[in-house]
Length: 136
Figure (tube, rainbow, N blue to C red):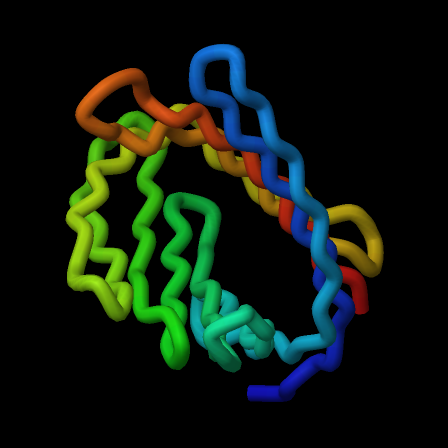
């Protein structure tokens, strides 16, 4: 179980009705492979404090766990709807998510995760696209 240091580039786009927002962040992290799964860990800062992030993935699914100033667990399975908990100081939110597309692309010294999912809210769903590029 060798830890590999890596650079993580995360680009996210959320669209709800006429509103469209794109964000881009970079982190330094570590990746470990165990059996068929890969585990990517990194730290991110928010205005409320530090957050430890762990992405576990294989070819079939992805899970993102955040702990610290924010606590959440997001599970993505292509073609399925999952129930996800997002904890804030104001209380817990239950967020149903429908995963439209999920791909793992391996390109030499890079791995690219392509995610496309809907966050189901009371009104119109929030369409979310995320590209996570891991470079060794």
